[in-house]
Amino acid sequence: MEKEEITEKLMQIKPRTFFAIIFGLVTITNSFTIIHQQVTRTEQNQTYNKDRADRIAERKLQEAKDYYHLQELKQELKNCKEK
Image (cartoon, rainbow, N blue to C red):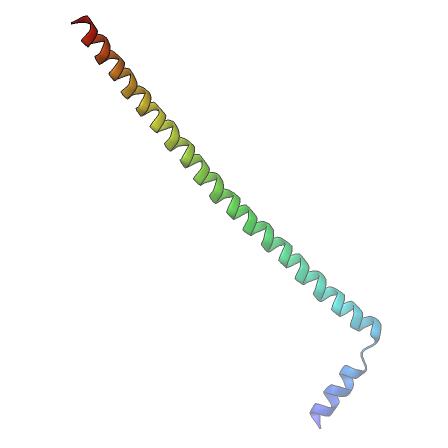
């Protein structure tokens, strides 16, 4: 009996109210999805930027080491020529 009453009440919802409820659900779902995408994209950008900065720092360090080694070799060659 109680089940029939609930069904009858649901059938009595006006179409305008039904469309408003559906519109609200769609709007909330879309808003949540957009916010989630923005948060995910921001996290990915932060990770990428950190990795990029690390790669740049490693490359500069390697270039400095190579330059220092090259200068040592030049100095050794110069010393060998002088002898």
